[in-house]
Image (cartoon, rainbow, N blue to C red):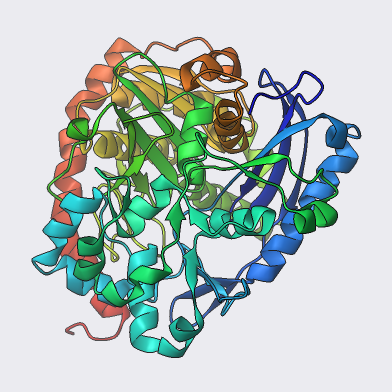
Length: 526
């Protein structure tokens, strides 16, 4: 469908773990307005992390209505809608399209033991070769296996299994569908870009095959906004709706991963750290010995995004900032994180590089990229009495940079240029350290809503606003990429010498992590 000049607005919906965002873009990628609401989910014992599916839709409707109020003429100008959302997880509906239970989120870990069993068996390598993705408890396949074993009554009521964005797409259009990226790493074959019966058998969910919906590629196919959804959202019935790819792929697209240059990477530095490379065909995908990471179809024919993800990125910085806040508070001095961040870059850059080693594995869930270890812990190495607070903070940032290098190395050669997005992209110190550790140019993406922009770009191509994704990226991405920052050559050389030590220490620590986990559980030896 070719959009008319009067209909020149594309709305991107990004239903994330923290926020449900709606953003209006002009045809050329300019952001016209946005509205967001906090997302809500619950945690309970046994590793359960769940989300109310009906509330997710209600909150999305409210966010869309908020956007309509923020951009008053949007209904008359709307050309298309696109939706993406948080990845992994399990969202089940019945014959009538109603939720049969709360959704299991990607944070849910109840399938961890099942995953450990599979990863310790001969099935793991066979699975990895098919999906191109390391098996993890956050994924839909293992979560379905857990439900099959522990909640068969829930599965017996279900007709279709969705991810978050698929559920929203269903309510927007009435279509039961999923996109190529999420189905591939959930229960697919990345070369086929779709469901794979042998993958289902290897996971142990062959009986669940009928639950997987049709694969719809939002870059070529749209469905009209239904009358019911139009009434709820206040948007015009019949406008084309595009099913976006999973949020990390849309973030990478919006931040500049798609480029004619052969050695571009994309790093998202938020609470977690995500590091991506683009493979131009299936044969260019690099599978690593640890069987970790993700391989996801990309919204360009034949292309794939490879991803390695650290469980904790800025969470490490927040932890160290909060230690200082707690100490100040004990003396009656109240400071926020924002107060402490104001001079953080300056102080970190004044500290001597390479004084300490830090492994940034501070997440309670351990680590998942480029290795999987639920017991992994953060640790400082090399402390002396001369080291102060800012030496620790510099080491934390260097640890994040070495973790990024570790991830990129698991996907092939280091990139020559990395586009950076996420909250920490504003840190001058972190970007400089990251560029030196990766020995590459760094380009910061200044666009605030790269995920919503990425999914809107998919709709822009699907509806004929652009003939292909490269033409779209020229308008939507390139103006938001700042000038490349060259790495400091001396610092890059120093970090190059340090990185093998970082790796040796990580490998040596694994038995210690296990011993500490056993001691904490009360089963260690005295």
